[in-house]
Length: 163
Image 1 (tube, helix red, strand yellow):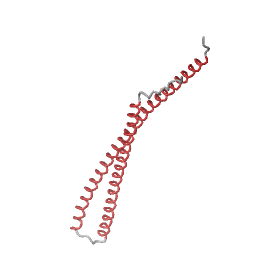
Image 2 (cartoon, rainbow, N blue to C red; image 1 turned 60 degrees about the horizontal axis):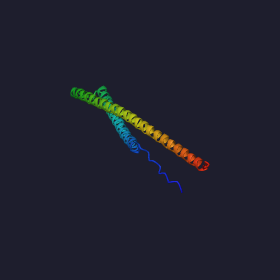
Image 3 (spheres, rainbow, N blue to C red; image 1 turned 90 degrees about the vertical axis):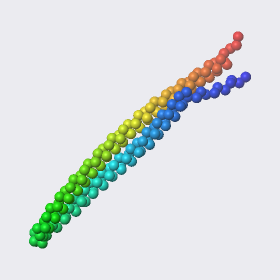
Image 4 (spheres, helix red, strand yellow; image 1 turned 180 degrees about the vertical axis):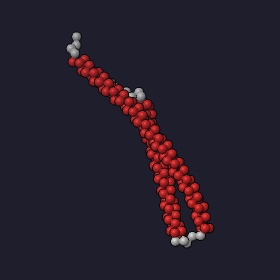
């Protein structure tokens, strides 16, 4: 009589394996989103800085032009008064741009922190998944050893002399 085919047991923690794998996938997607948000915040900060620098350069050129006209005697007292008002407005606008740059920097710092947290989440999820995978490998190795021992015992039983 042929020995009955022994059906291999399935890993009892297979649902946990799937949950941990899904967590790794979800944390990787969260990291990708955090990276995109950080990159967008970085672009926003650079854009705000560039806008501020461009306006400061325009104001500098206008001041130089006005100073040249004043030196040549082409400006009147009313022109000087308008220049003072213009100068005050330019300073106010520069302060506003500086606030925008600072706010963009804060958003970028927040995004960098969120990205770091997301990286930590990925590392944690991968570590948890690795623990289950290692347990699964040990379980499979133990099952293979048990099957080998059973096979050897069966072979020894077959060769044992009968009484």
